[in-house]
Image 1 (cartoon, rainbow, N blue to C red):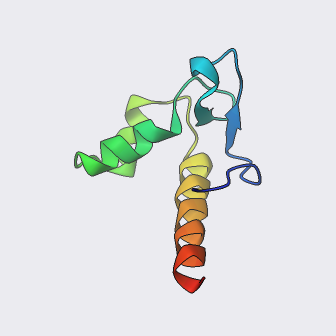
Image 2: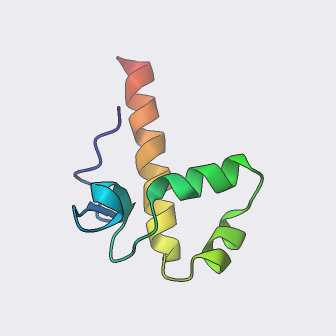
Length: 75
């Protein structure tokens, strides 16, 4: 499981989306990015659909998840 505590692009707030992981400063759940990409959407489309999410946040989330997966492979 990915540890998101050191990723500044995301936050957990019990008063937003039931405490689920969201893009910082928004109510957009992080899983929405992965679901949209899985369904064939591009990052550009995701950013158009969720304008409150910033491009740097998407880049940070994707990089963080990539690094987490690399760590799993290396251990």
